[in-house]
Every structure is written in C-alpha cells, then in structure tokens.
Image (tube, rainbow over all chains, first blue to last red):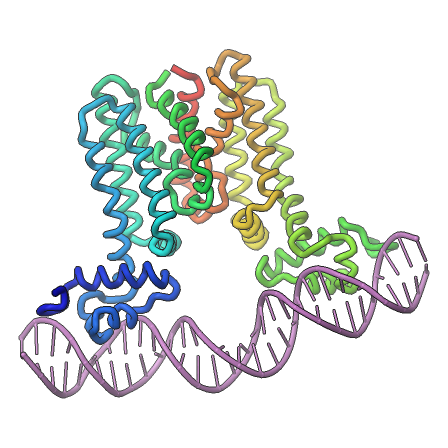
Length: 196
Length: 196
DNA sequence: CGGCTGACAGATTTCAATATCTGTCAGCCG
DNA sequence: CGGCTGACAGATATTGAAATCTGTCAGCCG
C-alpha cells in the first residue's frame, strides 16, 4: 500500500497532480490534496511551504518528463543539423501533446508562466543549454558557423517560440499548417546557422 | 463644432477610443460611449451592429497608425536587407510604444487576439504582405535567395513573433535585453535569407 | 523528538439578490 | 423618410454576506 508509514513528498506530489488534473489550477485547493491523501491539510504544509511551491513542484516534475528524450538527442553524435531539427520537432510534439492530453496541467503551466516562476525559468534554461550543446557540436563538425554559441542558441529558441511557448498553444490546433510552418521556419534557420 | 448636424461613425469611433482608453476593455460600455456623445445608446447601434464590432473598428484604426511608416519602408528602393531590418525594428518599436503609452487600448487589442478577430487577422495579413514585398525586392536585387517568397515571409514573421506579438509584451520590459535579443535573431535571419 | 492534528485569523471565493448592460424595436421628430 | 429616443427582455456584472481556503501553531501521539 502507498499509505504505509509516513507521508512522503512524492505521495503529496502525485496526489496534487491528480487534483490539479481533475479540478484545474483555479479550482484545486490544498484541502483537496489533503483529502485525497486522507490527512489534514496542515500535514501538507509540513512538506511544502506554500500552495504555490507545491504547484511549482508538480509542474516541474511534469515538465521534466519531456527532458529525457530531448537530452538523449542532445548527447548523440550525429550531424548537428539533423539533430537540432529532430530536437525542435520533438520539443514541439511534446508540448503539443501536453496541451491536448493534459489541458488542466497545461493551464497550470500557463499560470506559472504568467507569474514568471523560477521553475519555468529553469525549464527554459535547461532547454536553451541543450540547443547550445547541439550548436556547439555543429560548429566543431564544421556544419555551423556562429559567433557566440549561447547567443545563437537563445536566438534559435526565441525564433521557434511559436512552436513551444505555451502562450501560442491555441495556434497549434491545425497540425498540418503547424507542421508546414515549422518546416519553413526550420529551413530558414538551418540556412542561417550554416552561415553565408 | 463636432456636435453639428447628425452623428457620424468617426465621432463614435473617437468617443469609443477615449472611453476604452479611460476604462479599458473590461469596464468600457456602450452606454459610456453614448453618454460621452450626449446621445442615447440606441443611436450607437444605428452605426455599429454590436459592441464587438465597435471595439474592432476602434482597434483597427489604432493598429493602422503604425502601417504608414512601415508602408513607406516597404516601397523604398534601397537594399532589402537593411530595409527589412529597419522595417522589423520599426514594427517592434511601434508595438512596444503602444504597449507602454496606451496600455488600455493594448489590452483591448489583446482581447481581440484572444478572440481570433478578423481585424487582427487582416492586420497580420497586411504586415506579412509587406515583408513579402521586401523579400521579393531582395531576391530581384540578388541579395536574398528564397524558394517561395510568401512562405519565407511568413516564417520571418513567425520567427520574430517574440518582438511583435502582443502576448509577449511582458517580455519587452527590459529595452537593453530586447534590443540585444532582436539583433541576435536578426543576424541569424539575415544569414538565412542570404542563403548558403 | 518528529511529524500529524485540529482550531484559528485573515484572505479569498462563492452565492444569490440587485443593478447595469446589450441589443431590439415601436414610435417620434425634423 | 432616416435617424434618434426611450422602454423593454434577456444576459452580464456588481455587491455584500456567508462559506471556504491558506497558512500558522500549540498540543498530542507514536
């Protein structure tokens, strides 16, 4: 049983995730989470300093799911161009899937974005660092030419905001159009990364 | 006097703009507009079929202000690269200025964006067509290489969304950082437009 | 002792009654 | 006649009282 012994942060996170998924960020309460765990809501506050930090922890865990496959692409050794294309396509697919399959947690994510949460900042930092890594590979391989890797990575990330920033989620509805737009933007960026 | 003879759509638009600027999109009412004009609110409905269409007409007029200087750059005959850079910088500056100087009308604009209004669509179409025009010039001048002009223009517009899409307005606060980010993205795009 | 409980204060949300707004239209007025 | 008015119905917003929630803490229990 999961209810053996004492309450763990992991148990609380899972319960909180369920509650957020069911009620959404505006309706979910700490009391709901405690009720789902069969404890008093004071116990939850023993493990998380506030509702906001619990919400952040849940979202951080939820966002991390996508990092695994992206990280795998980052540390591959093939041609950087193909890898960066696949990395961006994978990121886009992951975000799109989250928006469609998990609307309430996606809405929670949006709340954190609006609040400039540190969790979101860390998420963006991780992603940009991975782009940076691939671009660096591309420069070593002689495929890319770039002055400053980190700056270029940031520019690539901003240029593709349309396809990963949750504020653009509504524009992902038409899969065909999104795919075409993405490929058009990619060919422009690839050409830019290769330099003149 | 502007109150001579009968009520004109222009008078209503100006009054509505004032009311929106003062109360914002959530508080402004048709009754407020009628009160400002000294007429009954039924009269307003004689010229605009609904509150939504009045709001759209005001926003369309407000958005059009920026089109003049952008259009001027579009029809110049100098090097396309420099012109596109100046066009994008001008667009960014105009949007940023609107967001800072006219927050309530900017909020109204955001409401229309969220509602997928035809007005916003037309605005985006006009802007993309101007980019297309400049890119076309660049191809003729031999400065740019692009397969499909309209597709490339759309890609450039999406790539720079961070600097003109109102959903990113909060990220424009730091002028220095925005400027640096914009230039980094521009150099990537310019390199991409020039082709390999 | 370390962790849980339940009661508490202040902040936030809900709910239902009330007021205002949107959109329509018959009638009036120039 | 073309356009404005003012009254109206239904929809939406506001308000203030009651309920619920957040965050804290003294005390209990294993």
